[in-house]
Image (cartoon, rainbow, N blue to C red):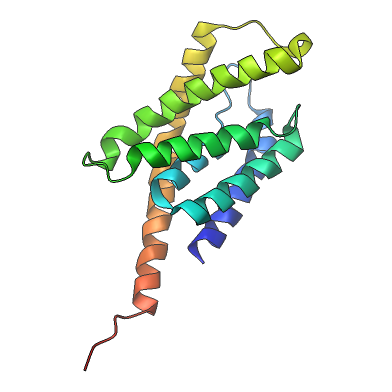
Length: 172
């Protein structure tokens, strides 16, 4: 039930990202909310529900705005797997590594995406700009803060509601 509700929320994020955020001025920046959502899923969901959630949402996003189909789902699945592996059974508190890992993974994802597009469709690429990539990465980290707070609140609420609905059984 939790994964389905988060899937609906992910579809809403895809819709918002492809429609509403396109009207923002370019100098303000357009954070990739779906990527932040993928990182959240890597931190909170188990492997199978998380992979299904990430693949279906990234596939929807790729079909809507993808240039070469398949790159965005591949990058999201790789990001999910890497973050899930890195954060599994980590003795460090979640809050200390979540946001830096989002920034680092987004930066490397953009580098890989640029490299992949340079081989597949080099005629549509803009010139690489380190300043722009660092600015976009910082924007992602800043945008992740309120989105993570809201997603964590929703996740905790649904988890507690699920616990209240299924009380523990007593052994007699």
